[in-house]
Length: 369
Image 1 (cartoon, rainbow, N blue to C red):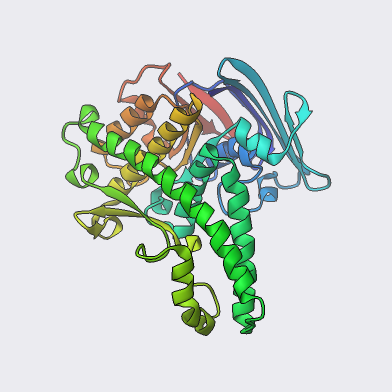
Image 2 (cartoon, rainbow, N blue to C red):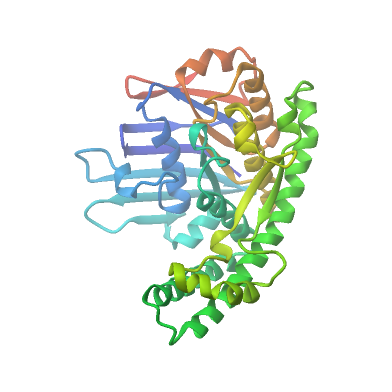
């Protein structure tokens, strides 16, 4: 799957932009606030009807304007698909696939996008909530019922926490059982997904020396694990029973899938405590590429990969490794970077059909030849 044409109108600082991207790697460079992040937020909006940043969708509309519009022409498994979205301040959003109005879930399945911010916001040092979201995205695209299970779990947990906050035990057993029922399903799908994710991560780690024989040891030796959110010696019902007195005291549910996490270690030590920013970003990238491979095994095509600020903190040695990994992934990627990386990336000498570069100049986006 790849985007063959992308047009955006009144998307933050972007008045009008049209791109004909590479099927492989597309790098958008420019000064701060030039519109780089907005450009890939527009793509993500056509998948999830929101920004991948923690901001309201309304903030994507250009100041003094009433609406933004995005049109994507996509090739997916040989089929041509047109996706049109429009977000307005004064009317309902418009979402169409091939001229037909569709639901948000249909849109998510039509244009699956993995979107992450890197740099100081990379997945290793982000909150555990972000890492759970990463697992849930992958789990949903393996088993779409995961979304309903997750929503039911969140609803049940909210009700149980409300009772705990009021010290009301009248219906605590009922909502505890609901938490167990839906939470067990959420955990089952996450844990099954993690097995596949870890398999691909290990495969990528083992192949790193094919891209760079002198790759840093902490990158090669990083392992990931899944923390389910409660003591592994117990099922969820047993863990909640044991924690009830504590939960009553602290007035919220202390164990369960809402406490799950992805852990990164080197020799048993938390990666974020011993690694450089460059290492953290490489590992974050391996995780994204692993998720794309799991998706490919399930669906026969790869999702679009959107990464904001990928090259932040990357030294020159790892810059080449990153580009090689992206090209080797066979997924269409859109990457933002400060303009200071432009000459460094061009010096790597990648073929034009592998890597395209776009630059924002005076508010206009131009393709680098």
